[in-house]
Image 1: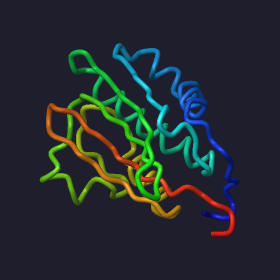
Image 2: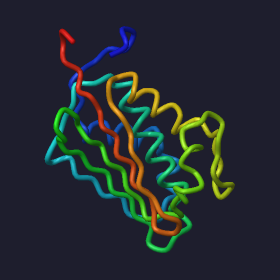
Image 3: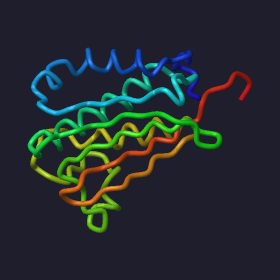
Image 4: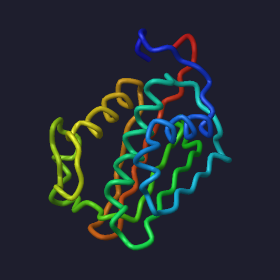
Length: 160
């Protein structure tokens, strides 16, 4: 864990509420459903600034790329996966052609579509945060079927 980031026990429900406040304008315009399930793993020891950045970027993308689809839905969940806390964000939006985009997904200033605004930095930032803190990120997606981000977060333990 980076020394300049204070780590703390983060309750995912509280993190979601903080994310909703940060994205209030985008979420107010979103006409879809957002479902959360933090029951299996309700908390993590992590840097709050990092956790908020990860969730904010993933939700912002999910909203942008699913809001024009019929019955947009975003699902956010957490679970324990071996030595990681898995934060999963799934949408039923426009999706990504993984064969074409696989090598471009996490490059800075790269945008895969012009269907929504952005700087092309969000995925680059969250991948770096997750990896610098001992985790990894995986994506499943198909065009017109939506996207699922699997963020394997390495929980911070004192003494590591």
